[in-house]
Image (cartoon, rainbow, N blue to C red; front, side, top):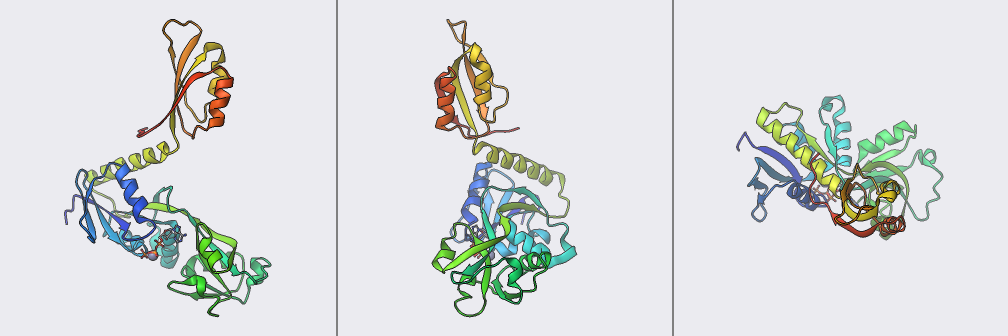
Length: 296
Ligand code: ATP
Ligand code: ZN
């Protein structure tokens, strides 16, 4: 493999695969990828993708097989706790907006939940024993952790556990298994991690460029470009109404002394209610456009 190229580990098949590839595409990366390949070549950037199981990503990055990785905070934290003091280096560079979920405690419908302290002596099934252990230890609860490698949600019905600690996003899987969520152990989302080893300058520069692009991608998601006409006298009120905008551009209108055009980037979504308020304040010819790219 080419040592001058960055390697990023991405989940092969699963919830993180598509949003990870979409993020890289939005950062400008074009990949050539054959069917079922474990590797995709970056055609226009010195960045290649390695497709692996998500659980392997922290170690691939920690052991410097890959320079970067996209993985759930839940997987990263579990691995970090399992490694103890040996992994101060497993650090997340960026929090990303996808892969949102939470690691939660859930009890069977008929269970009478009376708070975490009342869980002492009970069996809790999970694939995240480290995170659960820390949660229980911090609350001084002596419960028994039943380590499973999957299908945690059916453990109570099989009589293997009294309750579970598992990942939840919509809650429909819990519902289907007659379970009720009672506590959040960890709020999670995808993160970008990097190798603890220093990178040679060309690679380090590319990491910096990619980070800037990721920031740009995350910023524009909600951002809008807004254009409108307004009476000069109403400018103060209109600026106040523009959601999350920096100094707008004010342009004189041909043939008018008291009306100007206002152009501004809004860092938050612009809702109909905002447009209606702007109109009430005297604005007209309102136009809201999506922002495609942004570079600070
Ligand atoms: P593999 O180990 O084969 O790569 P997996 O079964 O561990 O796959 P997925 O179920 O695809 O992986 O989940 C990958 C990550 O997606 C999780 O670690 C978590 O960070 C995130 N995620 C988001 N929502 C959920 C959810 N509802 N259930 C499970 N994971 C979720
Ligand atoms: Zn996994």
